[in-house]
Length: 284
Image (cartoon, rainbow, N blue to C red; front, side, top):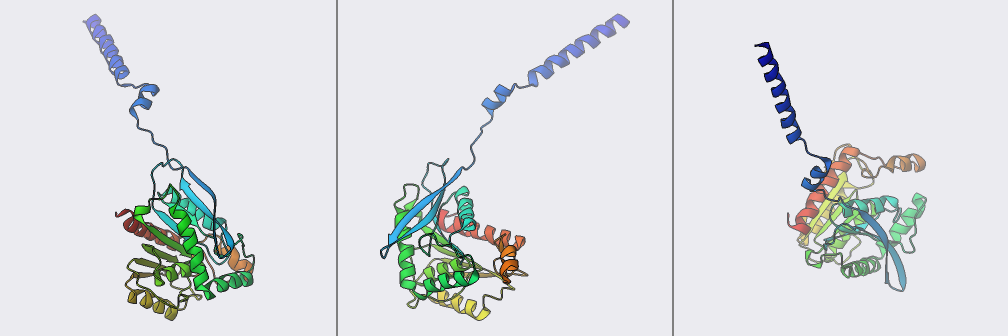
């Protein structure tokens, strides 16, 4: 009896070993069975365009692992100029399925190093909207020629601070974009001759931003609505100017400016902007 028990025990162990061996898959088999895809590989390059006898150098970002044309987004920098922060935002958009062009509104790649200089650069642009519009139109015309851009889906424009004011005026002047998205943008009405605009305007603002006057923001929203725009203004509680830029705290300390990064407001506004872009450009 003891011998039979041992025999059954040995046979059972052997059968279990065989069963385990049959369920194990070699690494080679796993590689064959698993559908491994490459994630986005973003690359940026210089993008030049000219108007009024001047040459401007933007930054074009796209996913080089994607061989399909994608919708385009024009990105307008803060009052500091086309810097690393703006390029990083363009890279983010490219990784998410857009072709992003960060434009140069000052020319020659000028970057302000002090608020006084930044204020001078930005005010010069906004005081001459026809010239500013010509720069944007030149950038958009060049972008449409890119083989990586899906021309049938149109374009959107996104801007920060000074750039937010620019994209709001793009909509106010009836430029051919499907959406204008502003983050803590200055609502100065630079376009003196508003034109019909049937696109979407999203304005993401810090509720405690002392640099954006509530009456100016209301006036801009009303002006855009009067031209047919679908306007949405969202104020983020506790957020102040520059809430999307992680470098805002350093600039605030260095120059004694009312700036501060707000991670929650940054995340919420970015998600809202992406949903808006996906809807207007991809139809989702």
